[in-house]
Image (tube, rainbow, N blue to C red; front, side, top):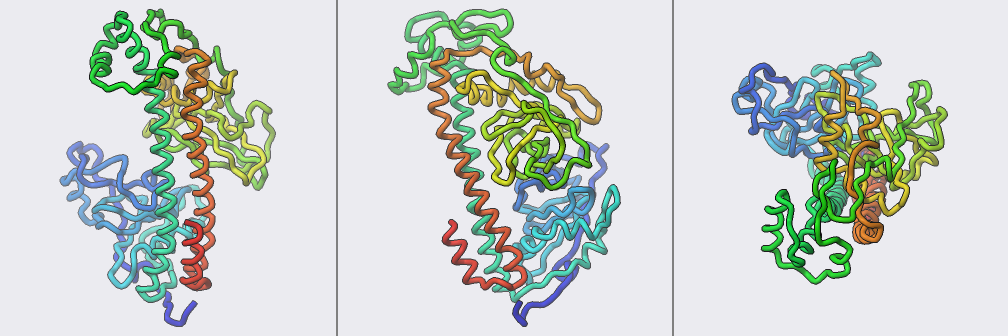
Length: 458
């Protein structure tokens, strides 16, 4: 650390603001204008651009002393998951669980963010070991950090930001790739576009519920894709459970083609350093998808069928009623080189198809609105929602031919391979970032050396 570095407190770096929630009984306080940040909005976020809830201008005025500008640094300071840091993209308000720093001009807000983002455990420790730890505004303001001159702060933040920019680019690419796979699933297996096209070409009747879609298909210029098109029938047939489906497809339930296995209950005493980890609710992103940081190391026993591997389809079986955006959501397990074994917890179920080519079909099915509505209607609970044991196994589907499933797999499997490759790169970039961050923050590593490592990585 150079002699030009100095130690300052967060209170010296900028104005510290504790958030506040407007009166929730006043409906007019909530709207679409001002982002209202809670700790949930800070998960996996460096820059908060969207929030679950927003305030109206009236609502923001009612808590005007808690309004913070863009580029403020917000830190969760209450609860077991405290210490999360994020940057506000817009003028915002936070709830009372968050303290924010409105950084003054002599400091660089991104440097402050990176410094605090590496100190989650330290911040948690400052709050003590109570069941509901709290780091109040006064104590938060006294947190110290060493800072170099402003130009060096910006250089350090630029290096770390380059890694995060690449990480976020990979994540956006993955979202696009998964959206492409789901769009194809919806076209083939929900809207039945190829069947409608074939029926129109053959002059066969179109069921009333597909008339509007048929008119849309008529206006679309078709590409010559006869190899795929020939795998679809050219007419529909009526079934008792599902109504009109493509002729020849089987009306079945998930339990007819896959085994659904619930996970393992566990004790807190079984959570310690291990080569085995539990896939838990925290392994799911809100809205579906897999998170790499949600695993819990586990030393207890489990059944062989409760162990999962990369590519397995898992479903969330519980959620809190306040959110209800997790229950019934799917994810595909991603390999984690840190552990020899991954085991699902009680709040998770694995869906194992009898035929491997059905895996991507079932994953697409689990993302549909119909599947999600079915699961929500089969959930019970007041504060915590529980999905009934048979909700997933009893869900009805129309299964196409095995040849068509192979055709679908052949198209989407490379997309998911790219997703996994991007995830591998994300891991490496995160590891490099987490290695460089403390060394740059302490002045142990020269900026030029760190820059060379980052340029080589990206």
